[in-house]
Image (cartoon, rainbow, N blue to C red; front, side):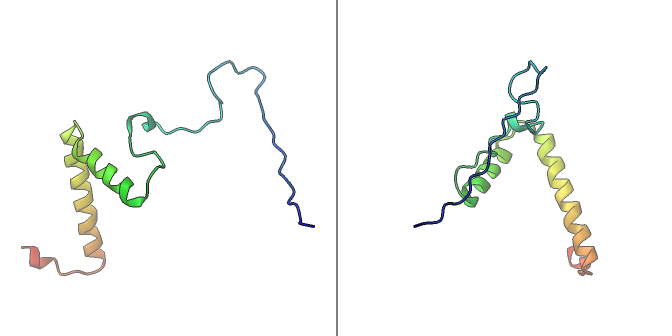
Length: 90
């Protein structure tokens, strides 16, 4: 005599006056259709390799340069916060 867990009730809400495609409540990112790294297949290593490949093969080099500048500024701010001796770079 096994114990059966209670099943949750399903509630399928359909708006009365909505005539568009899909659900009006679906949340989707602005650039989801352009990114190839959103798929859930594969592990962390595979996702990271896909992201690096997408970054390297990006047609817009100005964006890549901007990302590198932002990352370098953030690293320098972090090193300044932890009182790292920045004189070794100069």
